[in-house]
Structures are given as C-alpha cells and as structure tokens.
Image (spheres, rainbow, N blue to C red):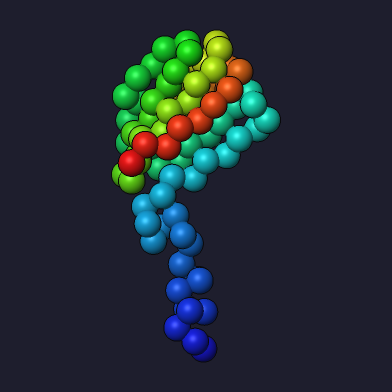
Length: 84
C-alpha cells in the first residue's frame, strides 16, 4: 500500500481539526467541532472552532440547538464567511 493511500484513510476533518458543516438548503446549518459562540444576533452568528471562526449571515437567525461540540442554526442564511 502506498503512503498516499494510507493517509486517505484518516478523515480530513480529523487531520486538520476542521469543522464539519452540513447545510439544509439555506434554512438550517449544523456545525460539528464548535468550541463556542462568539456573536449571536438575528443577522449574524459567529461560531468558534479549533481551526477558524465561521460567520453566518442572514435574517431571523437563531440557535436551535447548542452543545459543547456542535450548534444548529435556523433562519434564512444568505452568506457564510470563514475567518482564519
């Protein structure tokens, strides 16, 4: 087995501490790997992760669910920004 084949077995999100982000249309987003909420307003929510800050922009944004490692955001999501 080649070295490159071995490295493919480790998920990218684990190798680089990347968050896993799952969108359902433009209405819901789930972020796994969050370490906290930095900003929470109806038009912007900023989530801290180990490798970056992710900002979600839109209208009527709310935190539907929050746990120590994941958040779910509901609302009309119009833009996403990744800040390193």
